[in-house]
Image (tube, rainbow, N blue to C red; front, side):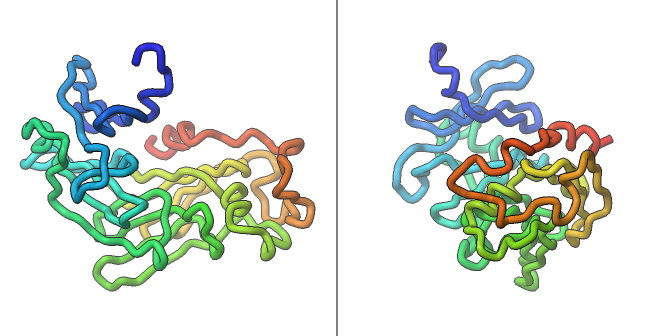
Length: 250
């Protein structure tokens, strides 16, 4: 695939391993040693069987290093699975079918999500789904109590109640990340010049802002036409999440 620059369209570093998500072939991921770059094996078989994946099982690269090997969390939008794969054992098996140590079921109707992180407090943390109407910034699901906690939606925009979910996703979308050892989270949105850091209870403990559009009610939804490139003319270039990570982990 030397001539297909989009073939390896996502790359993750997991301990000493480099995972590439690929868009064709029999398997979804290829694994290499991150320093030597020698090929170690494949993970995830394309198909519709019980242990096969119709679409790439998505990961945010969250892993656990244990005495049993390196374990990787991944999730499945279609089937609602959230699983912990023993990546070391899977590679050593010589098969692309994952060896799963833990599998959770998540009801997308109750807890729709786009990204998932597992907290050390046995809570699952998520961002909003693309078409979610009652959108929030971040939310969590307590596996012990089944309680769902949500952050507020901020900064506020005037008159948003009639905007469709996908427009709200465009306005408030943004990836978030978890601190590698603590239950702290960082999010930088696409449309606002602000970076927010949350604690495990989704309380904002630090914000980094610039310009004016990070403030409440800077925009009015009545001036937004979802059929056009709304806000493009006045949109400030938002700070990238990579910068957020640098500030977050210092």
